[in-house]
Length: 327
Image (cartoon, rainbow, N blue to C red; front, side, top):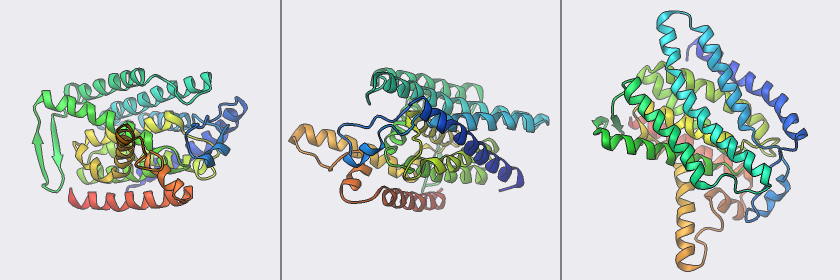
């Protein structure tokens, strides 16, 4: 990591902390409070009213740092690099905006349903399609994907790559969204995964990924100061969809979406736990897990929130090391 990366990491961290100090009291004053699920863990009912939509803090910090990068890069070749940050930022912030609309609707109608799933999916799908087309047509990134372990690239036909990439985007963002539900879990897991992807960017010398990843890592660390248990603010769908967008945008940009099956295994398992719970309940009338997503199962098994975050984060860290070893 060079001096400039350290600089933007610290600036991102400080910007997020400052924005958090300003935003959290405002969110509290506006009574933008969390509405807990009625079928969620009873221990979470005490969180009712805690400020939510904290993902806005992440979005603002990332946007400010992107602007700073544009002013910092004055050479012609650097400006081109800065321009390549745009699709990564737009995809991530775009997903955050969909999450923001969802959060606002929950607050207006005082329930946990928010946007209708179909409407939310349409919004996410539109952004995903734009991003994939941008990668192929504007940046001319091609349709190659890297196969970990075998250490080879395969060139997919266009008609295979486009739906594959779109499904990867939708699946990843929703998986990260499901990971949000315990204080500090989603930003911690996301920061570890994004750090792994940023290291891959360093290894492959993809500078825009390194810069963008570093910005988001700093923002996640800054946000954690307000989101660690007991959380002073929740990120809401605004933040979780944004971070999901960051992860999958970088993975596709690096041509390494399959690495997410390893390094993002926790979000994958969170998603599978929900699917298994629904299927098992429909067939038997009983629950396979005490509660889904998976982190709630462990909570009801006696784990405290800090233990859930610690164990899930350590697993993710080990999986990221494995991911780096097999690429």
